[in-house]
Image 1: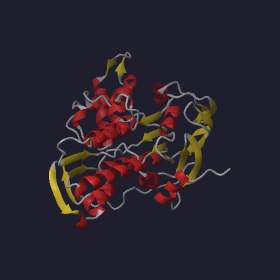
Image 2 (image 1 turned 90 degrees about the vertical axis):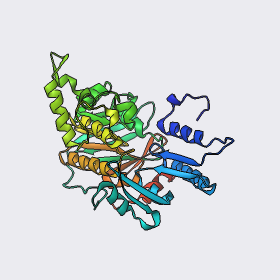
Image 3 (image 1 turned 60 degrees about the horizontal axis):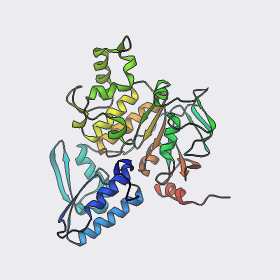
Image 4 (image 1 turned 120 degrees about the vertical axis):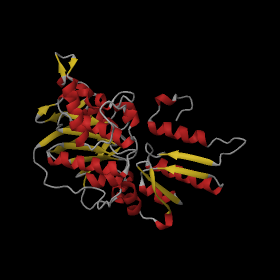
Length: 369
């Protein structure tokens, strides 16, 4: 980070690092209580580990740490005592030595979670949804892959290796300088995100508050916004009945917890905000769904709902591209995994008995000449 950069120009991860750094500046009176609210949601694995070392040093100096997170592995790694809240009520307070991941999750969602990731049912279809041939943009090189009906392709690699740029290419934000795209057996040259949505390619971006939601507007508006051409009379008068019906159907489909269609989106939890973004993406029955960190800052129960939606979509023939820094999520949900290095495709791995360590080792593996 350049110290002269404006925070607004930084990535969410770098903004979080700046916030954390500002809490650690030495003053005449050192704080006795530090509150971290989902601090690793936008951080890489390496940045998270550095934060945990900082927290360890603060504890040695007798500081009190209040750490809020939905990531169970982090809680088990750094916490001494855990309190679980559900629907605004405390349901558990226990020393970490007496807890397991399963017990914490059971307290959070009020039921047993037999499997973190729903099992895939059915076989992949031979029909190709999208094929990327030797694609280059100004930001990524040598991208080659195809996705069949019902397949989930994971994108993985070290932070900022080109994951977001693949989505930019498919949404028409970054133009091809070489190669070609083929979508549903036709040459695909998207003229921006609006064109991509019309062609039944939907996108769930990683920064829902910045890139996906209008926080002061209603659940209804945020759900239906890209689909107004299908909800309007004479192309400019909104059909209120259709608008409400679409919101009701999609809210039920994603199991949204909210008061009514006119509730402001900022009043919802992070998980329910993400469900609104998902519902909007599902409204057009997409043939290809692009998911960039779809469960970032989302609680365990909402994660499971999102995973079930992904499985339902693939069963109906939708192809999905999933990018996530949560390697267990990539392995648990994807059929194959495309590994990126330095904004270039390194390899595609079949997800067969793959472990997180196996996947991580590919990030650092030297390229064979």
